Length: 340
Image (cartoon, rainbow, N blue to C red; front, side, top):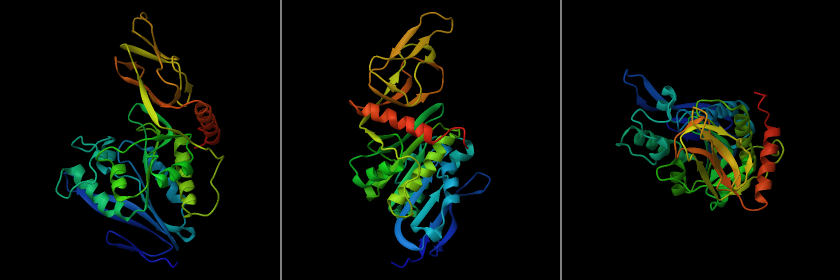
């Protein structure tokens, strides 16, 4: 089918072309304009419209680099459908190297937003009306919070068949079943009937090059599964294992934390995952896992109070643990940290 021009904001993008679209969002105190900057790749053939966005939390930088690298890989003359890339959604948080907006609101709890609400609500509304409403599929790029690292994983509502297919195509070791939270972009996408997957990898304010490379290739894998790009899926095929639940292992004592397990490691129920000791060197306490599973999130701060989260564990049953562990090994071999 012959491709028509694509319209975004006030711009008209012709088939087979790339166009930068700057959407006025707000102004700083000194009257400097702030824009939502979208890069649009409009293919020569008809197909889906994929929205790839990052930094809804302004300090989550891996997704920004995924977007930057992805833009260097796309050719609209070889593309079916349209790709909209927004590297930085929370422009205010990005400038301040902060997860939040200036009023400390979480932008990912402000959707669908309102024209007349607070700053976060207005920004969410603009993003929703201008960009989300134009998409047929969405990939939302995230990292762990500050001082917390996440194993590359996809979070998705596995009851959504089309979104699950996207998740399986992406190629992470683990898919985590996750219902959307009120006010999140995922919640909005669900209401609109748009399949969305959320890629989690690495830590806030840090580049994790293995996670970045996996993110770029993962997005391309999804595009190939949607027939937006030609070619087979790249790299060794990892068949992700779905975890339907996860839980945090919390500290039971105050003091220094000496971890005994690593990100991506398989653990068993009752296994010692860390030791807590006071700074004077006595009163050593073992922290044991209440779960079987794989460590998909870890705190990087070696001190913790009682009750603080230390390890996030994706829980599996039976042989799934072995399958997930094998996937982690294949993933680690495929995406070598040493190669930037």
